[in-house]
Image 1 (cartoon, rainbow, N blue to C red):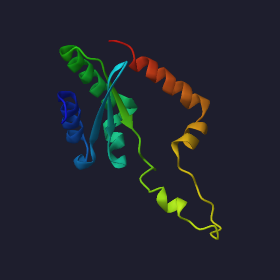
Image 2: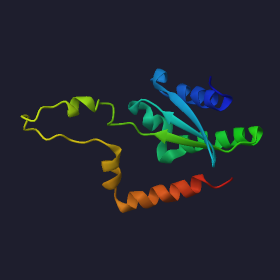
Image 3: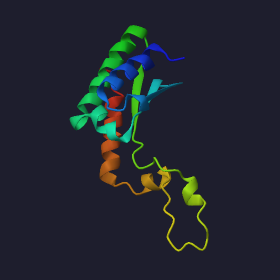
Image 4: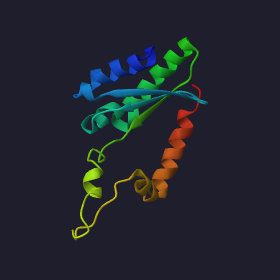
Length: 133
């Protein structure tokens, strides 16, 4: 059963994207409030984020307005699932005789290879997202 906040995000995002069937909004309540996790088709990720994050920021602003009405604090996380559409089982089932290297696409490895500039930018954006406006 989806709540009003999930329905709201789904409605807005499905209106923006070319693949509305791939839009998934998951809801999790934690100590910071309500976390809505948005997953879309990788081709539609740019449409949801917008130029310089304008569309995503506007969606977060609308969620904050909904939060004031419902006495809740909403956070929106947009999941970048680009590059992770392939199955991991095909890699793990390769035989030992195969000479081609196996590439691990786990998220742990991606986190370790990020540049410090990108990490600092993500921290600053997270701090801005936590501001009550």
